[in-house]
Amino acid sequence: MLLQFDRLANQQADRVGIEINSLVIAGWAGRDAAAIEHHIEELAALGVPRPSTTPLYYRVAAQTLTQEGRLTVLGPDSSGEVEPVIVAMADGLWIGIGSDHTDRKAEASGIALSKQLCGKPVGSRLWSYASVEDHWDELVLRSWATIDGKRVLYQESPVSSLRTPRDLIRRHTGSDTLPAGTLMFCGTPGAIGGIRPATRFEMELSDPVLGRKLTHGYDIDVLPVVS
Image 1: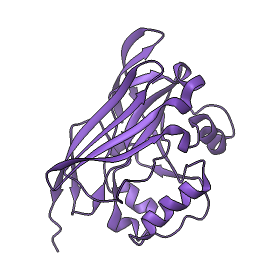
Image 2: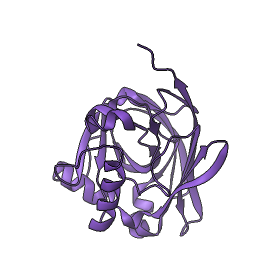
Image 3: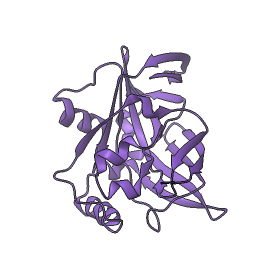
């Protein structure tokens, strides 16, 4: 899947295209056992079975990635969740933002299946991971969902609630890096008020140390389920 990114490193900006040939979604990626249990119970309320271990790494078709401003889904039972994403390129690791948009009804039957059924929106801007690694825990994730016509704060948490990208990479590969052409979703905080569908989803990764933000948003079009 060819994606285009605007990158920023050491005050130098460029625009690159990269073929993503491996998409990995790190699930149950929290640092705190209580927070992980909260998210497990949050999904259990929707009928989602408990994971066999944490974290888990789901392989998903790279063709599900999208940078468009609209996402089409089947049925009314899907929802987004904001996550940091790591993009591995020949010149190192880059940090971005994405939404692991998931069909929650299908998730009750199988998480791996559900993750294949929805597009995975990602933003078009990246920071070098080296520029944030030393103050990673200061970064903040937020999302807003438009529900019943009202825009509400849906998620808000420092990324310190999640395992660091470097930790997730080591647990997945046994090394400090990912093969070039890999994109990894790095986990999500719980939803404020519980998981629920929306007509629009907006997300943000804020870096208060360097005074900048990564943002992305998309509208959700729902196709009817017919049989």
